[in-house]
Image (cartoon, rainbow, N blue to C red):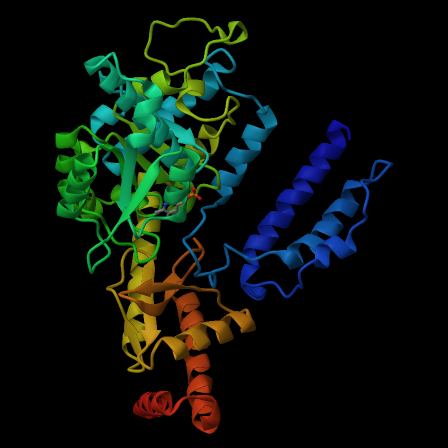
Length: 500
Ligand SMILES: *Cc1c(COP(=O)(O)O)cnc(C)c1O
């Protein structure tokens, strides 16, 4: 392919993306394909002869797009959002255009320095304490990881190394291999699955402590766990606080966990993958009270900010903690020594290679401005509040717990079984997509405002589908008595009748 063809191919692809985004409401959020549909329709071998780009775009439309779950459809309310925007797409394109690997300063000075600049910008925007930023006088700084999962693992590995070093300094006769199996990590039973996985990958026992009735890990619980373990000869090493849990968007109180960790000299990592973006708005910063006690903080710019995957913003109080854990010297990696405080990012992450991810963060922050980004967060929260209001106005439903950020958890008063049935029926119809969660042992449906395109009318659309499905379900249940146990029938009838 020559440059002229590239220009045509690229421009056609951009037009296609814009059309896709602008018309995304016209297609079902969930695809209507069966497993194996694509495997069956594509050739078994790569083409021997070069093909025309027009044929590729045609197949993209005819074979790939039908197999897509449309994460940016305003009817997508599952999981948590994944960010995107035209600004970010262009940023990614520019990054691909350069295609550099920025593992050291010399490997592309702009790649390292733009990351330093944008991580300072974003840190300030979120109100992250200054000591975590490169622009402070200390050793703190930010780095873009691929995912929140990686950030949790990087924190764990650094904490492990730091604890081993500390203990061996106190008692040089200790054996590293004897210390490591005794190290313990802690988080709550509300943690994201990736947190538990970090324990597996980093070979550290991970205790999932019981959260309180509101889904928050309390300082007292953590303190007791430390004491129990110490009494058994184990060594508390790493704590992951969940700031915006995946299930219900609950906030662990950092002002309680922080002092407990600092007192015991245990690394505190803040997993604010989703909710952290809200700290752009000063009215939500009370939810990160105590963040100054932490050692590392992670916020996925690729989740609730309009930045495409992958862009996970991680800040550490002391960059040397990472360098000491991950520095492996090789002659071919020798770099120029700079006088200024510029990080050697290959020591701040797991892989050696790294993409120029700062470009998309830079394009997004400039195209939106801080004001535009704050507006995005505030709009999404008010849409969630609007949805919660609609649900509450229907007395068959219950919103529980209270709406938090862009997430509304709700269920039918009729119980777990009928709520589950409602979600299954909705998923089958493919018009709106939500997933289930649990709250206080009850089955509930999680509704998240995900797409940046979402407007009030989209919320009305989604709610209408949910409500209509509930109507059908209620009338069905009354007519098919034989299928449901007597007690459920009474509840169902009761609830359905109340709504008339
Ligand atoms: C989404 C999420 C994660 C995982 O994020 P990745 O970037 O996909 O690794 C971790 N923690 C929380 C609280 C999340 O919401």
